[in-house]
Image (tube, rainbow, N blue to C red; front, side):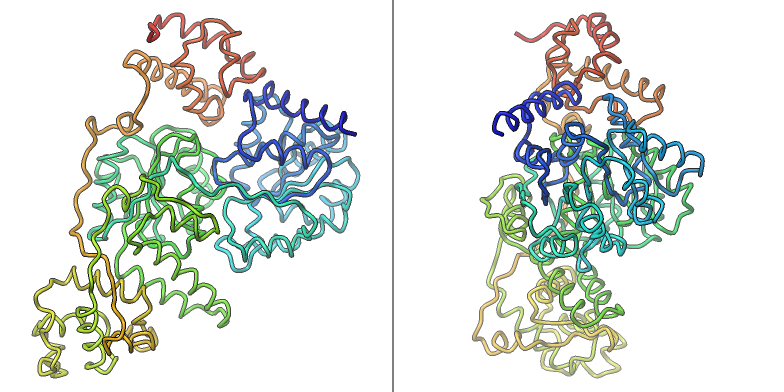
Amino acid sequence: MNGTADNLDRRALQVLETVFGYSSFRDRQADIVSHVAHGGDALVLMPTGGGKSLCYQVPSLLREGVGVVISPLIALMQDQVDALAEVGVRAAFLNSTQTFDESKRIERLVRNGELDLLYVAPERLLTPRCLELLESTRIALFAIDEAHCVSQWGHDFRPEYIKLSVLHERFPQVPRIALTATADHQTRAEIVERLNLQEAQKFVSSFDRPNIRYQIVEKANGRKQVLDFIDAEHAGDAGIVYCLSRKKVEETADFLNQNGVVALPYHAGMEYPKRAAHQARFLREEGIVMVATIAFGMGIDKPDVRFVAHLDLPKSIEGYYQETGRAGRDGLPASAWMSYGLQDVVQQRRMIDESDADDTFKRVQGGKLDAMLGLCETLHCRRMRLLEYFGEPAQPCGNCDTCISPPVSFDASVLVQKLLSTVYRVDQRFAPGHVLDVLRGIDSDKVKQWRHDSLSTFGIGKEYGEAEWRALLRQVIALGLLTVDHEAYSALKLTDAARPVLRGEQKVQLRQYQKPLKAKRTSSGKASAYLESDLSKEQQTLFEKLRWWRMETARAHNVPAYVIFNDATLREIARSQPLSLTQLHGISGVGDKKLETYGDALVALISGAAIPSES
């Protein structure tokens, strides 16, 4: 038995090298591949860019039959199939975008055993026709991608995912591998329960993405701030900007375009052809910025997204982690940037309070929002807070804003008492703006109308401006000392936790307000400077020639540029400058099929470039 197992593991390495062009597995990949190839079920939690796809693609090629991948991402299946075709894997998909004749052709390939991998939308999989098709052929494995979609508590819930327990019931002998990049303990338990994976082996990789720099700034003018950030650190880079509303998506995309950034809008309210065209441009062209709601992004395989920006507060750490994880999948430096202010806190609380969900769901969502606020307001390393949420201990990273420029904390107990007292004096009936006017001694018409200028707290906070008080109020709400009653015109109300603070029995330590600063431009203002390139000037010139060749080749093949080679592979080619097919074959990401297809052209380009290597 051991001899058979060793042989299978050797074949796995051979497939990895000859098909995908990698000399070794990363992290837990080898264990996962071996376990599934031998027929075991698995639950895999691995960060975006960690190589989840190989965990089911390699076993599919090792086992007899077709590997069936259940994916909710209809719009991306074509690109996934194109990428596999480039490395010589026979792959196809079945979904609602195909004609009846095209679907019949694919079904015939499945029955004849002429496919290695089949991508299926969950809705299609659950139809009697598709289930009968699968029962009539040999199945190598089932891969349930984006498995967190099964969780009713999660940020990407898909009702049809709950019905995927049918795989265990109708195909009990076929191994199943469920994969996700983000799941807290509650979501993991739900995946196991709903997909009948109680006996599955669990593989949990580190959630850390050390190449991503996390930065959260005080919101002043969000659109202007994100433009400054792009201009300073990511000019000409591909990126994603997330907004909460469709209207804000359209307005932000227009604003960026007017200011020289090539940006496309994407949200669920757009006509499907336009939405699909924008997604295709983002995937296939260089340097496009997608401005989107969270309707965009799950499963995006584009490896060279250099930044993800949030103009509004995400609902949960899971959502934030999933969205920011779309940056830097190639392992090169990337940014996760967010602007965040008082209105974000109020708006998210309102969305929870006004939803039609039951009290249990609201309580869970409120807890998730509290954790997200904790990440924003932390005085310590953001990465530590992020990883600890997923149960992973960590040390200060040195690559987030709170590590690079540690915030100043101070004893805010007296200021908080002034704020809480003012809320109390206005009978807990008024919204933040009015409370702050009273606190700062502003003689507004409304203050005079309610005679709040005669209160003992009127003007007791006049030494600070509105921005400082809003930052403090935001932190107080995040700490749970105040709540916003949306049924009473967003009135601020004291919580039980405020009492010991008012009595002076409990100290409050807060982050000192810092005026938002304009992002500083890198030395060249271009992406290449931010990447801290280890290429010489001559090698950088070759790298740019390789990128131009890749773009033209991708156009000719009608596939995204990264499907040909990703930036990391091109950088390695530029660094080592192989002058023969043998030398080229040793570079990570160059498998047999790609060597056969592109090898001669690359060697000719490099030879013609005549770039001297560094000694």
